[in-house]
Amino acid sequence: AQSVSQHNHHVILSEAASLELGCNYSYGGTVNLFWYVQYPGQHLQLLLKYFSGDPLVKGIKGFEAEFIKSKFSFNLRKPSVQWSDTAEYFCAVIRNSGNTPLVFGKGTRLSVIA
Amino acid sequence: DAGVIQSPRHEVTEMGQEVTLRCKPISGHDYLFWYRQTMMRGLELLIYFNNNVPIDDSGMPEDRFSAKMPNASFSTLKIQPSEPRDSAVYFCASSLRQELYGYTFGSGTRLTVV
Image 1 (cartoon, rainbow over the protein chains, first blue to last red):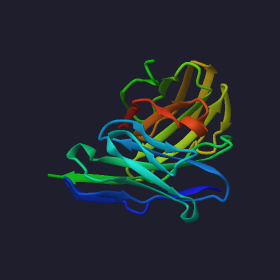
Image 2: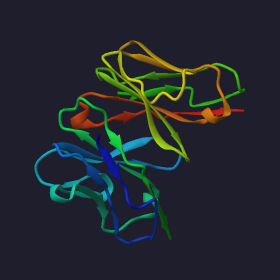
Image 3: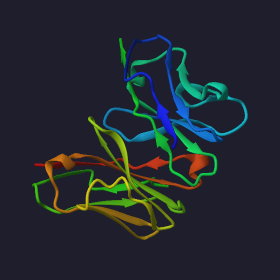
Image 4: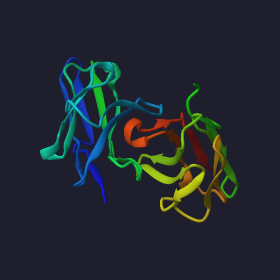
């Protein structure tokens, strides 16, 4: 079965600091990968996704993620965080065939302080 | 498109009462998912449908929970009888080609059972 590990439960950063959130998955086949963001009191929204091509994908609000197949990783990055990036971030993986649902990680809570 | 629409946004009910949560997926989407989110357990997949047919309900916690999708534009999640431990935010999500586009989530229903 697939699984997704997000290493950090809670990350606290100062504004303008750089961000990297780890995500590793376990599945030997071809997968597609997603990052979702959940702002306080809101629903999950798609941040970015990868399914083929350039392993460095860019999403909304200056976020990017890099797929490293050999490491089964899909880490999320942002060069300079803002207070408004305070949210919970979920990594998710799905089999390329699409016949099983997304598997979500447990999420990483990001707190950005001024 | 109005997105995935859930109702009600908030529900407060007494223990033992029946609760019905409603979801209208995005038109044309063929997958519908029900999730529960709590601080303790995170995001849990309860059940999902493909073309109105329940595919996997292994995440439904107990027989008190049931879900239906009578047509492509409507689904319900029912809890009868409700218990305080059912208090959570319940999200509905829909998808078309989930392996490519991921899910679109509704705004959720915050359920409080007192």
